[in-house]
Amino acid sequence: MQAVLEAISDPTRRKILDLLKSGEKSAGELGDHFNISGPSMSHHLSKLKAAELVITTRQGQSIYYAINTSVFEDAAQFVFDFFQNKEEK
Image (cartoon, rainbow, N blue to C red; front, side):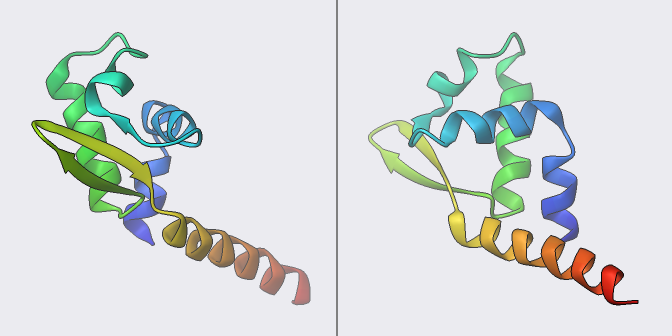
């Protein structure tokens, strides 16, 4: 869970996830929405992948990224349980 919270704490990574809501995209397609270097974009994508928030598929020489919904469900349940337990105390 720590990796997930760290990954979504960055606004660039949140925007990447927002872009992926409409479907999978290549690193180049995602990069077109940012004014950052290729290595910086790669770093952000690596953080998201390490947190298992995105899954990748290779098509030829391109890597496509998509949201890993099961991790989002786990994170949402964690947040829900966290606040639910606070209200019960």
